Image (cartoon, rainbow, N blue to C red; front, top):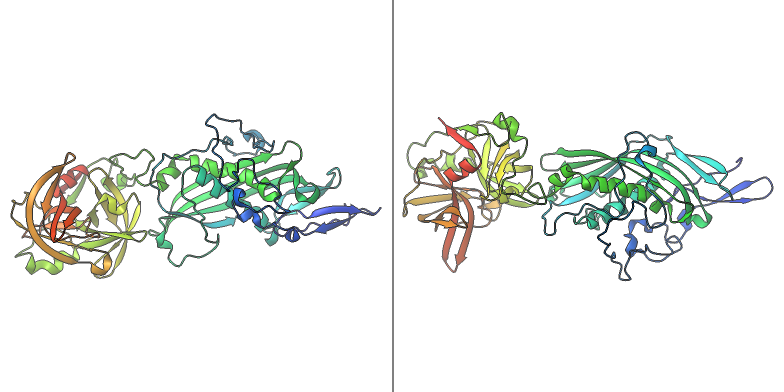
Length: 502
């Protein structure tokens, strides 16, 4: 229609009102509608306003979401619309995920800390996104093309589906109270950052009176990525598609209309086993005693369970005290997401032994030498039942500790080295004796009165010659008495499939 104009602010379409015989169109900017920016608030917590006169039917009066029935429902949203079949959603679109069937992780499952910190678009300035119809019978048409103002309107509706679907699937809120584009002072305080890239967006719809009724369709395609801030690597990538088709005019804002298509993309993301493997501690909701990372194939020259041969480090000449500088150089601090433990180099390939609970299911960690140098380490093998793990660092030829071939006698002098209470106390040396050998819950341990604290976990227990006899794993204290436990080194090597060769 000649003379019509399209405005965009927090919404995409302006309200078009026809007047006069010449058919001139007048526009009202949605920025002036009270509550137009409330799409940032979860639907069940939004204040009643002109933009959002009602709350979704699944909301309780206190702002919580009413539990959904267990029985599966058709893939049709409550407002009468429907997911567009994959065939009509465009080439490459994935089948729609049922509207009321999110993939829920097991209760009590421990997940890595995740933050939704990046939202971008691959679409170009001026690219056609579809068309908006207007007029009393929606017989007028205006092209919808991308510009900076419209970009906010098509990206913003991603937020609510991300928050809602992560919550329904049992994950912590990845958005929280932080702004979407806010830069973190220390990105390493989260295990993973989630990013979304909008690759395709196409819509054709007619906004009704007051912008509260919409009739049309929308299709989106999103590329998701998980970024590990420790290793500075992308550890997961996937593309998902979503679409939504109204069944006649429905009462909703544009953000909710677009959001219903985005909701499908989020559910497909959460349904991907590889996503769950990357986000859940230990790799799966069901857990398991052994969780070996596939990258061990390259390191071992075969399958992840194949034995890995490490060249034996030579024994020290003289006493442990005479070689303490070199021994401490072989002990490291292992950190992830603000938590820390200890570890030590074994063999000549830059491999570090530590506890499984120190790496806590992470694929990448930071390994800090006593000199202050930091390395990125990749967890290539771990066994959560025996609480041991193997890390491959980015270098070689580090000072490594020799491995004892026989167990120390009860009463023998032993020394522990590690980072009690964090890296500020790295390289701390304490001394004691072997108090006993104990079997606890079918696992055998070296018991010692040597002093260790949180942060020592994963550090070595050494005999008088500086050879490793155990790996620090836990401790008890009552008054001045201390009872600490270490995984026998040979059992740690066996469970990880490691062979020490000359």
